[in-house]
Structures are given as C-alpha cells and as structure tokens.
Length: 325
Image (cartoon, rainbow, N blue to C red; front, side, top):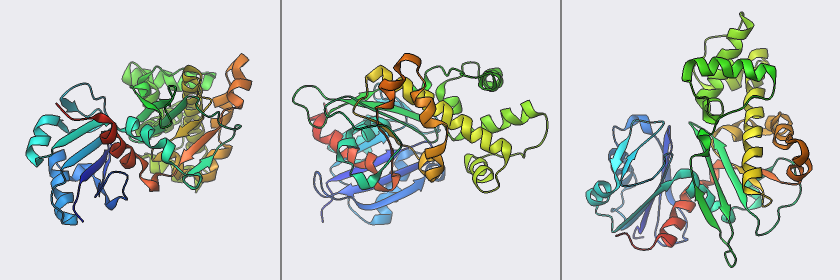
C-alpha cells in the first residue's frame, strides 16, 4: 500500500502515530512513542517512519496539546518547539495541517461507536445540539462541537479552556487551592485536573493533615494507593480530582448548552474504571443550583482511548482544511 497520510496525536507525554492509504481508510501501524525519548518532533516522526518502513506520506496532520495560533509551535507541557513550515519542508509534505489535539478529538466524536463509550449518567442526547469535550492527561484539554444548519459532522471549537480559573465549592477545597495558589499564583483548572495536578492535590492534603502519606511523584502512584491500598489521603485526592473535573465539565456544559452530551477524553479517567462512576464527578457536574435539572438531563460518556480517535480527527482535519497556502 502507498502511504497517503501521516497522522499524529502529540501529547505532553506520548506521541501516537499511524498512517492511511486513503481518506477515511483504516489506520495502519499505530504506534505510541514516549516524547521524552526524542529531542524534537522531527526525530520522533523519522523514527516512526523508519520503524514501520514506509515512504514519507504526501500529507500529514498533527493534533497537538498546545494552542495553534501561527507557524511557530511551542508546547505548553513539553519541551518541543518547531516551525510548521520547516517540518513540512524537511519531510516534503505536500500538505501539513496542525491543530489542537482536542480540536482533533472533537472532529472524531461523530465517528465514535457505542462500544467506544461508557455512559456516566444523564438522559438522552439531543440531536443537533452542541457537544462538550474535555479530558485530563498530562494537561487538561477542552473543546466542543457545534452543528450549524445542514452540518451533520459539526464544527469543532478551538480554545484553551483548561486554563480557566478553578473555583472551590467547600472549605476543604478552598484550603487545598490556597496551597496551590502559594505555589503557582493563578490556579487554573489544569493545575488540579491533570496528572501533575493529582499529585499536587495529594501533597496538599498531606500538608493539611500534618501527618502520614508518602512521597510520591506520579498520578499512577496516587491512583494505586487509592484504589489498591485504600489509602485515605490518596482516596481523598482522587475524590477532589473527580469533583473538580465535574465542576469544570458542568461549567463547560452550561456555557455551550451541551444538550448533545459531554464527552470525557484523555488518558486518566479511563484508568479509573467503574470507580469513576460512583466518584463525586456526576454530582458535582449537576450541582449548579437552579440549573441542576438542566444538567441532570445531559448524558456524559468516557471515551475509550484505545480507539485512537484523535488520529481519525486529524485525518478529518485534512479533509476540511483545503489546500495549504
């Protein structure tokens, strides 16, 4: 098969890659490579092409965990920076489209099947209504999909909603956010609702307790302590994490009028399994005073990351982008 498109989903921790031989075709040779193993995005792309032993495809599309506002890209949660034009010229791509990774994921939402989604409460989606999307991983991605008249696949929203200011709802949360504010100044949603944020929540609770707990450095350690060892501080950190995620998701759903549903992407929530379903997420999602019943009707789903939907979304971006100047 002749490669037509190189597709990449570039996060702060991993880069996922695949190629297609035709638009809407199946993904071939999907790989997940740790970003830290490569000094540049060019090096990661070259390593992938050599590993799967294909010629450089004519077209490429990248979803990247970063705002895309011009030719220069400098990642928020990783050291890579590059010029889109330079990458296109280095590899000889006829076309290169670079978009935010959650914009790419939003483009893939209409393509997802029920088997790729796990429901977390709510009623039925309203066809044609706006859809909300967010998800914690290395950072906190936020997007959405709106459906102008005559549009069946929707128009994605590109923004940086993960960096909105995070608000406390309880005294305990106020105390925890005070500790984060000492460290970071502005406490965005991403400061608590991401991998590093879960670690910070755990250590803030250790400080408030003035006893116990362990020195940990990864979200996986907190999750293991909580779900395997039933560690009280780790469990509370995970509950705070899910509660904050619910508040942010509810804010986004209200802002967009997301009666088409709320999708949760990213790598963290799927790893929590069914524990997430009984976490504070759904109650906090609906806890918006006079608009509780409005939110209670909205369905939420957790996306199975194994389907690599953002790669399909990147391919869709090539279909709708037209020709590069």
